[in-house]
Structure formats: structure tokens, C-alpha cells
Image 1 (cartoon, helix red, strand yellow):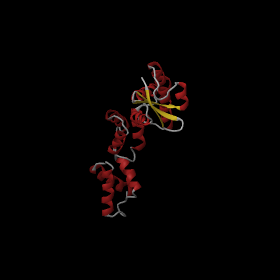
Image 2 (spheres, one colour):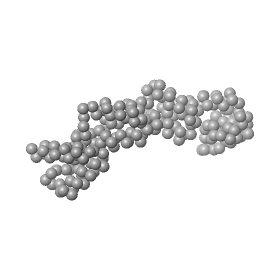
Image 3 (cartoon, helix red, strand yellow):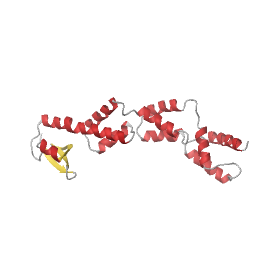
Image 4 (cartoon, one colour):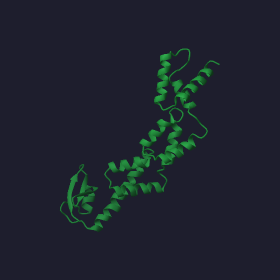
Length: 206
């Protein structure tokens, strides 16, 4: 193998290309440590040593830092590490590492996400947000089954009605239509909206 290019990213960080292909990013001190320079031969032993002792270790630490910063799904973590230009197999190894300690759990992520939003958002809206975060539909369905057991959308609609300051006597027909349209856009069914509004009105004026 031959180091075909060493490209500066910053004053201290460099992209290293081997046999014409991007291989990894090293810091200036690491270039000196492993005698990396353009047109230099790179043995398989040194190549693997760099990948396992430097790049993989760094990817694991980066993954841990990202998860300490905020709770992420597996897909979100994979995207972050890929953006940091870690090789695909290194990314997967780092993800397997943090998963082995339980630091990534898409099911628990989905369940917590649902619990924190189900009183103010519809199931459909939450579902699509979780899909967008890369959680599998199977895990989302399981999390919904647990979180919404014996529950319906009534409470979420009631909270949104309160937010909109809805009341039968002071809300015009046009305003009522707009509120209903808003709730439909949120993903609630028309029948659920109508029934909840009737219950809400009865409670207000009983």
C-alpha cells in the first residue's frame, strides 16, 4: 500500500488517502508517529494498527461523547459518526460497542419520546417524527402499544383546545372551524375531535 495523498483539514488534522482512496483522518502528531507521508509505503500491519488503536478508539470515544450530549437513536448516531468521516466499518464497530453497554436503545428512546408528547400531539404526528429519527416501525408500534395501552386521544385534544382558548360561547363558527382544521392537521380523527369538543363544552358549562 502507498500513501497517495495527505490533505490538510485544519492546522493539526489531515485526511490520509491510501492507494487513491480515503482511509482515515489523523492528527499531526499521529502522522509523525506512524511515519505517514505522501508517496510512502504503508505496511498492512501499520495500516491495521492505525485503524484499531487510533481510529476505532477515537470513534468509540466520539460515540460516547455524542450520547452524553443528548439521547440519540442508532440511526442518528450513525449519521453523526459518518459525518465525522469515520469509515463505515469503524462506525458500525463503535455503534456495537456503545450498544453492548445499553447506551443505545431505540425502543426505550421511542417509549420516552411518546410519553413526553402524547398529551399534546396525535399518534400520527409522533409516529412520523420517530420514523424521521430512524426508529424502525416495528419498534415504534411496540412502544405505542405500551404507552397508549387503554388510552385514547381525548386528553391530547383537550389540552390543545385549552391552548387555543376554545369555548363554545365566545368562539365564532369560523374560529371553531379553524381550530378543528388545526386538530386535523395534527393528525386527530374528525370524530375524535367532535366528541372531545362536546365533552369539553359540557364540562365547561355544567
